[in-house]
Structure formats: structure tokens, C-alpha cells
Length: 143
Image (tube, rainbow, N blue to C red):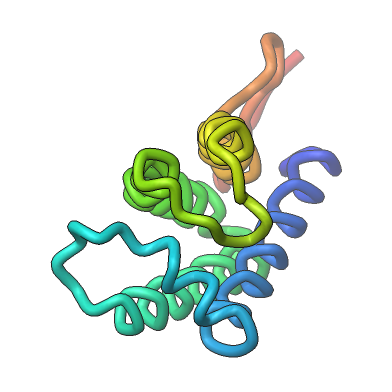
């Protein structure tokens, strides 16, 4: 059984992803379009819509499917890795969006993406503290 902090991390990240996905599809759609790199070969609006749907699906699965938390956590971590080049492009191209209107702010943001990867892996049960015992269905531990 996952710890309360791990469960809290999973639920918080899942809810945040659903919220971000909804924003992709509604009020912040143009802001997200500005973040699609110029070199990306897919239409900006389609990219934003598809990534919004992916965020909603991954976030909802992270919240609603605790037995699949490892799989969903890994998929969510992979999603964060896949979208990272867009964040790099925003820095390199000097694109203003979401208050990231200076090179310094855009550069600082780049360091948060690895934290999201770690958060997804932690919430999914992939990262364990030293001495923490992982239990799976059907396994037992003895003391």
C-alpha cells in the first residue's frame, strides 16, 4: 500500500494535469499555441488540443486508477520528457507565454520539467526511499 505522501503526490499531480488539460481546450488555448515550437510539423491548434486531451486522460487515470499508478506514472513521466523540447524551443526562440517574458524566466522554467518527471515517478511508486518496502498484490513481507 502506498504511503500517504505518495498518494497525495499522485492525486495532486493528477488533478493538476486534468486542470491543465482543460485549460488547453478552453481559456488558455492561445497561450499554449504560442508555446508550440515553430519547427514542430503539426498544426499549433491540433497540437494544443491533442496535448490537452492527453493531459486530461493521464491526469484522470492517475487519480482514478490507483492500481495502475506505476503504469500511469511512467506514461506521465514520458509525456513530460516528450514535451520538454517545446520548453527548450520557447527559451531558444524567446517566445512569451504565461508570464515567461524574459530569457531568465524561460531558462528557470526548464529546470522544473525534470521535477515533474520525478513527481510522476514518485507518485507512481517508481522512486522509493532507502528502506521503503514495496508491496504488490499477492506478495507478503516477513519481519
